[in-house]
Length: 404
Image (cartoon, rainbow, N blue to C red; front, side, top):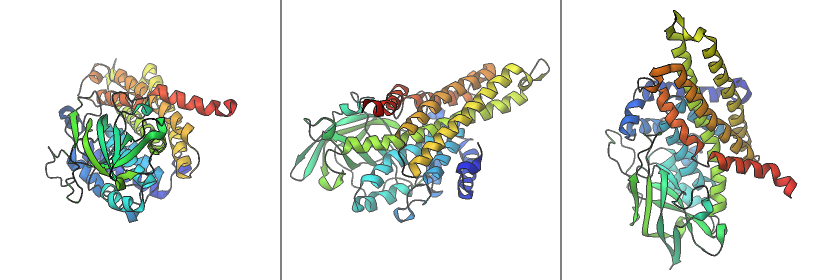
């Protein structure tokens, strides 16, 4: 892709900075953290210090004051080396912070966003439940209002940063009779699991109250994204002040659907990073590996696979950056985000499988990162809306005018 089409000199500078950090600091430890499933606290703190946990937020709110394209570039570059580090940027920024930036009061923004944007604490988004996955409207967690406060009960599953995070936006039913218009969202705070934090000082923010009854549940033992923290969130008679409600009562569903639209571009960027990282590994291996007296890159069968991988990655870049450009310029982007997420996530799976095939038996071992990349790619077809849901979203956009 011609960088000048979308990128300014500042974008190139962001890309080079993240690329250098990913290759110098993340690549040497990615396999170790994948194997141990430990959260990479020290690297996350370094990312916060570089401004990578608040890229699109204003300097007034503690962010880097950059744009959405810079944010997507950072996710993309990080995921080339390790998707777990990439999803930490994405989940923290889009899911944990953007709802407060987009829908919060001035007081809420000033209270919570600087802590998140500076990387002082991590944030997350509590939406998915045992009975509310693709059917996000099936929320069972309740928030009952009494004496100016809400009493929240229920649970969430598969929540990124549930253990290590301290600030969360969660959804709960405030009016059971109103359907999707009866779902509201709240800002909640909890204690973080700081085990394996080592010398890092991120987290354990003393100014944040620990809401009694709000805690993380069991940690998931996942196929991929193993260095990313994924757990349950549990609410047992948690008292939440009315001032912690995010937006008007009943606006939770509308607001989180907008959040997911933006999140799909981030997953597209992450997927592309995985795919491009797998292509880079395959090019290197094919140039070095010799069979029948010459590098396997000279064989047409390998060349065709590399060519197909490169072609689809180029197509995916245009889809992803086009959706990001639309969002940045305040134009409708829901359909384009779904298309980018669908294409790029499925592309990541196709590309990583080809990468393993090119590596042969070595690709099936942990001596090379392509097997980890394949495991990391799979969840991109599931998280923030499955491939099937993306197809539903795209079809609704296509048919909306006809049905109207």
